[in-house]
Length: 149
Image (tube, rainbow, N blue to C red; front, side, top):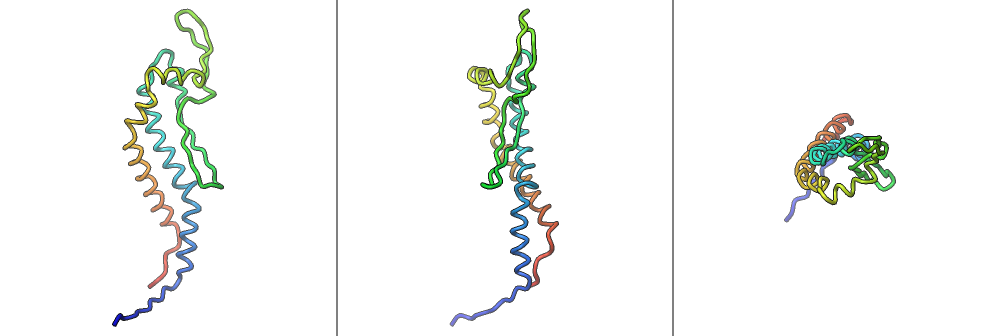
């Protein structure tokens, strides 16, 4: 015959409230900074792989984290920035270089972006897990203490 035990948990409402609260702060205070940090690993690898003729493309490489809070989605956008154009002189010719207009052509021939993504995959995963774990622990420590059993 099975024994029945009843356990009364005082303050379970506080635990539920804290879990909801932690979920609300997770995206802006935990996941977004972790995604920025992980994207930086890829950008640094890209800058190391990009062929350099005038430094314009290399200097334009960057990251941006885009959020859609209604769908709880965060996306890291990595590549050349739009506002990083400049006038350069190559072989006696002066021209306006706009990296967003030609980065795909450089990638087609040198694959610097693909190499960066492939070589940093494990490091990005580790960085994300480490930063998210630390962020959750930090934010959870700020919440009121749990119930007594």
